[in-house]
Amino acid sequence: MTALLERVLQGVNEERLRKNLLEMLDIYSPSGKEEDIQLYLEEVLSSAGCRVERQTVEEDRYNLKVVLGNGDPELFLVGHVDTVHAWDLEQVGAQEENGVIHALGSADMKGGCAAMLEAFLVLNEVLSPLEHPNVGLLLVVGEEENGDGSATFLESATPPWVVIGEPTGLAGCFSHFGYLEAGFVTHGLKRHSSLPELGHNAVESMLRVLLHLGKDPLFNRDRSQVVYSIREMHSSQKGFVVPDRCETWIDLHLPPDRSPVDVQEAIRRVAEDAKLYIPGLKMTVDFDFAAAGYNLGTENRPAEILRKLYPQLGLNLHLDAFRSHSDGNLFFAAGVKPLILGPGALETAHTPDEQVPFREVVAAARIYAALCLLMGRS
Picture 1 (cartoon, rainbow, N blue to C red):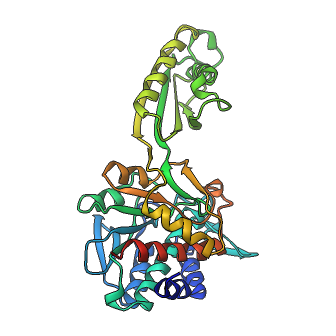
Picture 2: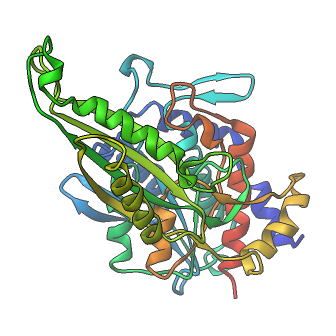
Picture 3: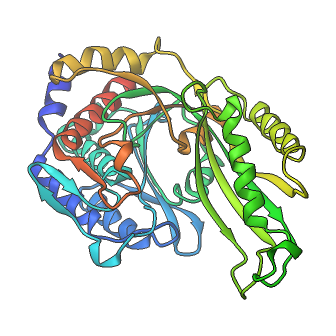
């Protein structure tokens, strides 16, 4: 380990990191309402002497960008500051128990953002300007909705590499699942509910469609690599009547080498086939969003750094594929190589039990700082 790297790793301030993380978790920042947390982060960075640039996404919504060094950044640390909406507004705020911090956004991904913030504070604090690597920090809005923050950044910059702090349990994910959002609508005939035989129940048709889909090999959870989840289903609810419309949305996460177009065609085939088995079926199928996965391989500079760094930090390196959707798909489509790596587990993200071990946040800060130092210096 070089003396410069040792200085950076030793410079991580756990007390400051904990304080900033807890403050961030106490600021409610669902997608579309990120200004309060951006104001907090801007103040922290500016007070430390960093030059912070606001990057406007839309009125009252902006990314924060900080660049170190004198050349074009070789690497950006990217974190999204928005969260999903709270399950219960009275439960917003952090609680720490036995070294684990529980709060909305703790894993997805304010834990990663706090670690990235600390990494940049350390680089700016312990290194002289001449020692600064050519790297950037990007704190974006809107990831949980449509990725408009990252899309805005990509309109003017495409760095060689980004590290995105989504929750991976500190596994290094150089491959990433694709994503497909499928919408099904069944149509029926509305009649008084005491006379269902005179109508056509759109909910019953939808249930039969879903059972039919479940029998196809594409949706066989034991055999198919495609991960699917029926996210929501609702129907026309007014009146004491047979429902004439039912809508269902299904999330599909596709292995890195699986084409979203091929999966769309397979779903359309199964849906068309359902008409042979479901009398009177009238159904439309739409795909609102699709993103291809990717596989960068593990023979590259960041992977080489991680292989040497993790043993020095007392960590076991696990390389995996990121199974969810993230801004990583967006960066890859723009020609940027994204590494997904962050504290916390995807299993608790978006749930009332969301949590992150603080020791992982500390380790992530050191990993990010090391990657910046070693990737951003020629």
